[in-house]
Image (cartoon, rainbow over all chains, first blue to last red; front, side, top):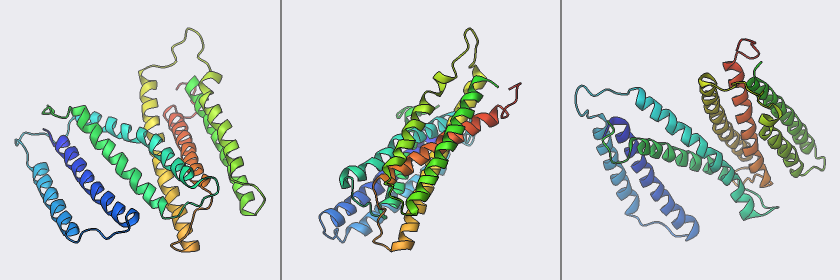
Amino acid sequence: MNRAQKNALGALMFLLLTNSMFAYVFYKLLILKETPARFLPPAFLILLGGTLLILLIWKFKRQSPREVKEDERDKLIDYKAAFAAFISALFVFPIAGVIPRLILGENGCVPAWTLPLINFGAFIILTMIYFAAILIQYGWKSKGE
Amino acid sequence: MNRWQKIAWFNLTITAICFIICLLLAIAMRWRVAIPPTPLSLVIIPWLVLVAISKVIFRKKSKRVDFDERDRQIHNNAHYVGLWAFVLSITAALTIEAMICFIAAGPGATLGHPLILLLTICAGGGAWIAAESVAILIHYSWGDKNA
């Protein structure tokens, strides 16, 4: 597994972990109107910190001293992945624009706090697509050489 | 001027005209003229149709090669720039809208009509087409005959 794959896999894991935590807290606080379990935030922080530490060591430890940082193929893969993420924005933003109208109806009012939430959600989705596209292009399981 | 430059100029002009019309409508709405946000979508639909049929309006002249490797690269770069503009403009617009709402009406502020959100996305589409057209024109040196 090369450096870009490690980076992408690490970021994807990190985003999935953070998103699942956010989704759980959002569901508990806003839908069930309950307080999340007390042990959860410290447990989550430990898990997140541990994951980050492993990922950083994994990323910066070179397989061999001759390992190059990035070549032409890596640049092309990166370019295509960014392109895929941007193209997905063409679907993500319009869907995010239509959903409030469908929920609230013709005369409903969209709360202003949903706007930064749309930005944040779109950013997370686009970033995940970007890293997934990198992994797909290198071929998930192959060594990437 | 080649076919792609003509299409880019056409798209840029149409987008600029629609932007000005939308701006005038928005100013009219601000001054409490009885215009709901719906007429804005009546500007957007013709814009979308015109941009979509621009390649049909400026047809390929028979037996002439009008798209080679260089054109492909120019278009790839222009698509990239356009999509960047799309994402950045929507993100910026949503942030500014949220800030204006919060400053004007506090934490409980609302955006008003749900259509405004959709119009913001359409404005992002306008930024995309405009940025892509400008990128194509810059790559071809605007109107250079040797391009």
